[in-house]
Amino acid sequence: MALPLETYLNGISAFCVLITGFYFGIRFIMHYNKFKKSLLPLIAGLGFGMALLYLGPTTAFFYLIFTKGNISGILYGFLSYFTMPLTLGLAMYLGFDIFKPSWKKWIMIFFSIFTVIWWIVMIFFINLFLESPAVSAGKLIDVSFIMPIGKPMVAIGILSVFFLLGGGFLSISRKIEDKEKRKKSIFLAIGWSLFAIGAVLDTFIAPNLVALARLVMLMGYILIFLGFSPVSKKED
Image 1: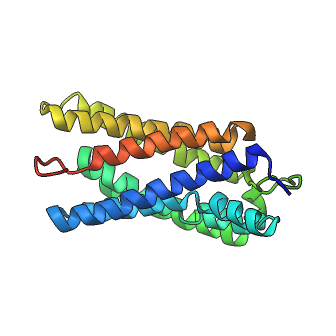
Image 2: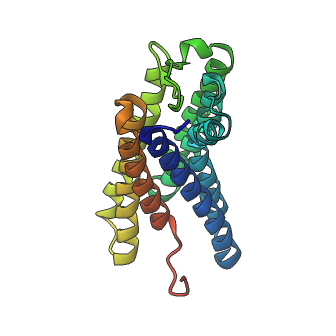
């Protein structure tokens, strides 16, 4: 049975974002071996964490290709979203360590509490958190967050990224005199903003725009990791 074009666009776009995250994770491990900067392993962890956000659709895509069936919605949800609050918390730690260290402690307390609540809801109240609409044969399964718990929690994460990281790096870029560091700060501001926009498109907008959402997310990933790359004349 030939799969619809929409299925290939959905699965391949998710796989591309996943591979990009893993690529940058490995790249920053290599950066650490070269530059020995303490934040680089954390940035590598961020790369792996951002890759895992697309483990669900990637797994579902290859499972569909080889078995002609779909994985369960619950498995899809756990593969994609169980580590999401850790990834957001790590992103906030890295961001505030750079542009607002005095706020870092309180931000991490908030995201630690947020992570615990997220896991409790996912483990014990999954039916109040997300649902998996029925799909026709050959189409890729997806999940959607539901009210009154799922959508507000996801919205908190997306808005935090957009305003705290996107806005924070944009604000600090205006104060940086070094041109290279200012450029990297602008990359981070735009990258995190695109990440949030891609998350909105992927999570809340019609499924036929999912490939566009992944393209926006991919551009965000690239800019984020270009922004985090060490500033050095020795760097390739």
